[in-house]
Image 1 (spheres, rainbow, N blue to C red):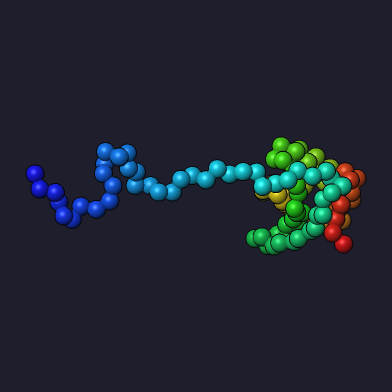
Image 2: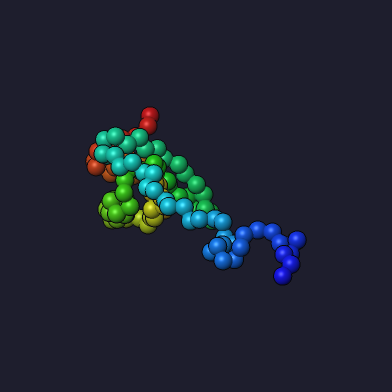
Length: 110
């Protein structure tokens, strides 16, 4: 049998796969720090006409960040969410949020 001159690529017997992108193993890039070692700052955004107060960057693991969010939402009486290393709260409440976080020994940039 004659070999095909136009054949290119790998042999199908060599367990060849067409997907050359291997899923990358995500390593946790967040280094967990004590509250006194944090350097937090505030940001405000307007979303759909409403103000959102954002506090970042938190260097905590996900369960601890969720517990902190739950505690702060209960004390402030507002809604909020945790996204990656940030906490977002509904409303323009940086003063109240700062006082609650300082009671928990978090530090802020000046």
